[in-house]
Image (cartoon, rainbow, N blue to C red):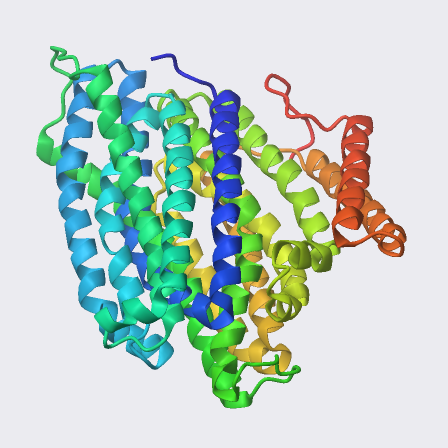
Amino acid sequence: MKKQNFIKGSVILMLSAVAAKVLGAVFKIPLTNMLGGVGMSYFSCAYSIFMPVYAFSVTGLSTAVAAMTAKSQIFGMQENIRRIRRTALLLFSLVGVAGSLLILLLAKPFSLISSGSGEAALAVAMIAPSVLFGCVTAVERGYYEGMGNMYPTALSQVAEGIIRVGAGLWLCGYVSSHGNVLLEYFPYITDVRALTAAAGICGVTLSSFGGLVFFAFMRLVSGKDKSYSGADVSKTGEIASELVKTAFPIGAGSVVTNLTAIIDMATIIGCIGFFGYKGILPAGVGEGDIPRFVYGSFSGIALTVFNLVPSVTNMLGKGILPCTASAWAADNKAELRRNTVQALLTAAIIAVPAAVGMGVLSPQILHILFARQTDEAEICISALRWLMPGMVCLCMSFPVFAMLQGIGKSSLPLKIMLMGTAVKTGGNIVLIPLMGVDGAALSTSLCYCVMLFVSLAVYFRAAGISVAAKPFLCVIYAGVLCGATAYLGADICGRTAGNFWAAVIAALSGGSVYLLSLYLLSVKVKRNKEIPSRV
């Protein structure tokens, strides 16, 4: 297979992530419209327990396999690569089974603790098999990423997105229209929305199974792995030990990151339930449902929009990891510096205008995307704005964490994430009683800002390199011009046009000014030019 450089590999992954996110929006927006705020709380409850277990089992796995494969490839250890793949499949299939069983066992008690009823238990149970499917898929993705081939990961993501949309929405629609009949088969469920949420979760599980089938088909088409002779082969026990040592801190770090969802669920529901809701009560929502309604709106709408761009720039981390591992193994500091500048500047160029645009156009964006959920969208307008600084920092944190892992500092992201989680927890407790759900959004931004600046300082010191500040300042300046233009465009067009056309014209005008500003400031991601002034 032909190896791809960082830029090409990252572009492939980002394009697939964009496609997957579009498919995700096609799935999530109609789902939110069907479920409403309370129904989304059941859906989010399942994700709240699933994501930490899934992240611990899967996230570090693909990274560990990719890093070990890239290092073996740089020294031509082909037989070692084959053994890494085989060992990882065996070891983490067992981990996947354990993770799935854990979620099944915790489905009922977690539902009772998190929502005060057992309504969400079925949704939690339906998502459990995804851990096993995800573990096997992660090994295959890590293998191809380590070999410098990003196409399998990209194609599998798109395949999963298509299955999620098709299966998830069809199942939700069927259950929603036949809910009263189906409730007879689930006597412990009284709310049709809980049953519909479980149907949506079933679509997610089927999509993860589709990813597994995709790689099984690839193995079938490509045939058996070639056998290579040679002495440069590690023992299976040594490979398993290194996989665990590399994957464990990365997976634990991902768990810490995903704990923010549980922190939000506990603190938003708890604080609003204790201190009360200061806003106008939405029509048709009982006072006892307000805490879950606000949390479901925040998690299902504000955080859904917030995660759109980071899920794309996350692919920069996947793209930079094998390049960083190879440059570090070869002790090539010049290549390491070039890769670092490319990754950070690319993330900034994507994240800054997206954050500025979403902040300026948050009313139009939310009312367009969630036209049938006006009460839920109204709650999230200011919260989405408070989330935007954190979105930029999160987008840039992904490649930094990947580069730390590439230079062998796998445990450092975990420590940094723990620090950020402490900020998030304290921020929620202090700010939610004062600001409501906006406080949860602000504490999220503070969390990711702390994580970014600490990780940058640690990485530059560990790698022994530095980069110039000027290109990043130029990106920020261009972003300010983009936001000002978009604001003026939305204000002028909003008087005569509806939300949709005002948002389109504002986005196009702001984006045009941003691109023109970058061109005039000569901010480019350059491969072969070092910048003299360092920070």
